[in-house]
Length: 230
Image 1 (cartoon, rainbow, N blue to C red):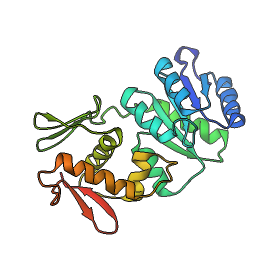
Image 2 (image 1 turned 90 degrees about the vertical axis):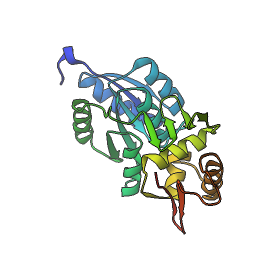
Image 3 (image 1 turned 180 degrees about the horizontal axis):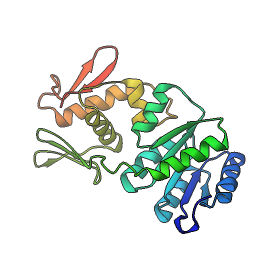
């Protein structure tokens, strides 16, 4: 059990109330101050008001999915973040960690392992080195203010256009598949067609390319996806 003088606060955002209550009870027994929420939007509001040391966050949540909440928290708070999910593929883990999580636990898990991960996450300092601004020539993306410019001209970007551009620029030089972009920008539980990505790419090109029909910044990788050349 931790030293009372070092008591840490933990927010659990989990819609499985049996699991939520089990984790909360056991963490309370270990001396942590625990708060709980059952949906993503409530969890986000609580995180903003409580500024906990750690957020334990299920990926599949009502109202606001866990990956979207994770990305918002990473922009706004210094809290450590642990993701919980029933999905264990390597791609799922990469998406979770790229969204800003400090760790990733696959269900089912034992409390001993869970507690060890909690302690490790609290010992580590959150990754505050994440960029606040992305640049490529005269293209500047302000991640905090959610603004983008080409030279002195501010771009009129929709919410998804901004997130898509930021995701591509963060991974400049890497080929990102349509499915990966759908998951990271539209959310873990999005079931629409991958054609949505193509449409938004076309709109982005019209706003950031000198010649949208011969793009130099966002290139198409045939049958796979897109790459930001930066």
